[in-house]
Length: 385
Image 1 (tube, rainbow, N blue to C red):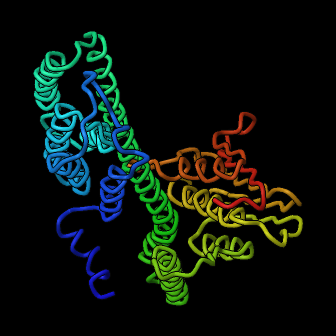
Image 2: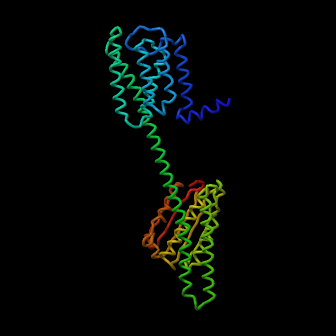
């Protein structure tokens, strides 16, 4: 039992697949069975000869190299071809001749370099074997040797097809992995943009306002408290995001609840932006990712209002339906810029991607009748982004 346990380890050190060892042994043993004896591959028409010591050598050369066919495919093919040549020239016609197409498939499948020289070398080596068999045999037609060569070429072609298929699959897996990494990086960048931009924008606006409140200590204290509160909220959201990126984080995802939209509105009001908030309907019991996406839509729209239309009246409307959540954020007048100078473009474009993933509709632009900038989103509930 101890010896058997060490067989796989010994095979790995030699680069030998253990599964191929039984294949070689079975093929070697089957070549001596009366039912298969002298019923193997036959080309050239030589009369069958009884087995002798050279027959054992020919069978061994054809069978045992198969055990290392993946590690040394060319050496395996050379030994098998030598054994096959001896088999045919002596007229043994053993079952071990089956090893030749197996070796050819292996070389075509696993040989990475010098494939053409290898094909040329073994093709040239086949010619003197065919000539010798034709001369010492009963003179079988040349077409028989050509047909056998084409059969060997087919075995090589099967191996080459397997190699190409394996390479294509490996390339596809690499491409899928790269696409997955790109998508994940994009998602992380979008989350960081949504979380950081809003809070930092609010803090900047509140800090700038505090510079002009030195004559009113009570209002200055209120403004600085708002900055501290916004900073704490930013830290909380960032911790939440980092928890989601942690591989040890559980499968349960914590998303901002619908009630946090009101907190978001209050935070924006404290930053000096007049915001009217209206919420209609009752949130569904299970909304999937719709709650989070609705929250992000409001968050990004209010961030843009703070950055590009500070002080302009802004309205937020959230409607909860049985099958969807509808969000509409409108800003008076000059709130139409979607990105500031040097902006990354991840804001509204990222929102559109979020909504599209859930099968919803998203639009952002000026309203024709009054010129207000309006962000609208219809988000189906129950979907998982």
